[in-house]
Image (cartoon, rainbow, N blue to C red; front, side):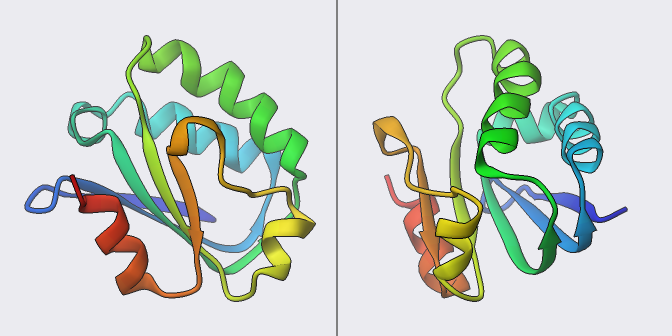
Length: 120
């Protein structure tokens, strides 16, 4: 699987890793699986590491798939995501930007991403 996840119950964070070629179908399947996991839903926040991925979908694809798969499964609950990239070039190339309501943020450093995610 190009996208894997585990739930760190101690920190109450879903740890997601993308590696290799990642397609729209991979992202869709990942969301469906993760959002059926009660522990992931309870966490309500994820640390997504894109540093070893070749992302084969656009920012528009990410939004469309997220709207179709995640929004109905979350049922109005908030989800906060810290995305780790190897270069900020990825953020512009794939349209991965801080989204509305301050629920997503992009980082180069994993420790900084986790600190931001678990604050509050």
